Length: 341
Image 1 (cartoon, rainbow, N blue to C red):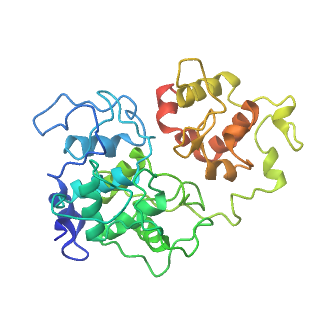
Image 2: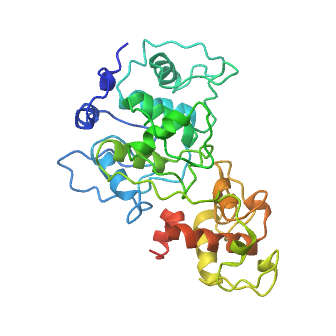
Image 3: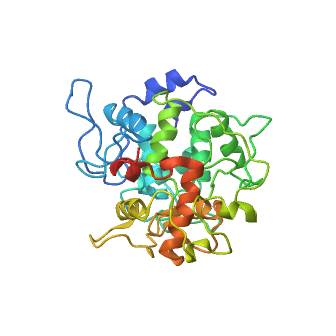
């Protein structure tokens, strides 16, 4: 079996883009508008990515028939990808032979993704887990995605690898270094890559869009002198309005942006039944609480335990700290939807 887009090592990105331009990327049974062709002037982007950091990459991929939305109007950029979906995504991107490929993963069975899983495994793009199973329903982590893209596009890790406090010498370290060196990713926060967080549809669109030149590459921000996951005590009281102490949110603290702003943002992020924000929600996709914190982001701003176990007030307090560092882009879709940026 020949991997069409990477038969030649270090193939230029322009050539890879040309080879991929006719490929169809469909994650699972993706719904939504058919991919727009060059003569279709009706595609105007997705409602939940328009005006966000995802828009340029998502729109470019959709217009070229590489990706679809999850519904008629939305892309669902924060939805996590499973390993099975990622296998189908990569198999269709590179037009792999999914009919003739075979596998021996005991947990795959005769599913819609079985051929793709076999194909990417034969090509060496994805491997099974240590147990010998593929774990098709588990979510693809940012670290795994980095390794998959590095293998697929023949990226090379630099000799002077970028440093992240949360990336050690594991099996994905080289892939992470490669995608960062190529400007495909710059981590999740200064000094952090969040390797264990689930890869989302929006993040994949950004990664692939940057790889193919549809979006601008990104630079690595300066690495802080200290691990941002372990803030010292003075940092705990830097948020304007904090009253100090071990838990300022339990006192007369008022969020700088106001309670109503955070309530609106939380309603967009976590209201699943029309009753308002769910501050104790655990959606199972790697994001927690009313403001849908990733665990690494929660820890980076001083949170302990899990976000959805904390009070509404603490979640808003930690949200203020995260917003001070990353801006409203920490909640790209919802902050845009409710007019915060």
